[in-house]
Length: 218
Image 1 (cartoon, one colour):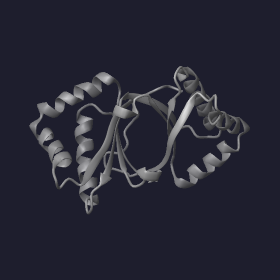
Image 2: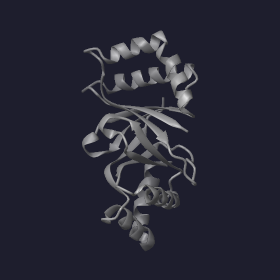
Image 3: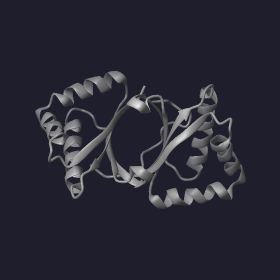
Image 4: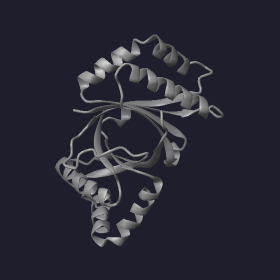
């Protein structure tokens, strides 16, 4: 069972470069302790979440998450960095933290891309089986539209976000993502399917928020 821990926040005005520097510093500490799946992304198109950054770490299991975080949090450099992030002169404002588990799909996760499309949804009563089925179909369509990776997560610990399902589509570049938008309309079957699973009163889930993020190399 794959596990992802995500921290979301904002850079204070005029402190963006400092925020990126701190993320790079944190990434190096995690990697030193064997956590090699570390990513830092920021919003490209995300409505009221404009300017948000997301720092994520991934682990192959819950046990690996627990062991990896214990090692990393015991590091004096990480303790100092966490302390500075809560200080009055910190370059960032931490907004939220969530722990998600990945739900395996037939398509598999695929590969990573620097452009990440994210949708969060709330499951409607009795909709789990259909949601999983339609997600598989969506992943197939999205990959035909140019995505190189498709993943499904459930938020298990995240305050008011707990229980939400999150899908991510990863693209090699923004041009590929944008070209994929046209393909929904060029294929009537794809367009009809999208309408059925998003706008129908019998849809298995209700979309809550969507956004496009771009990865910043660490």
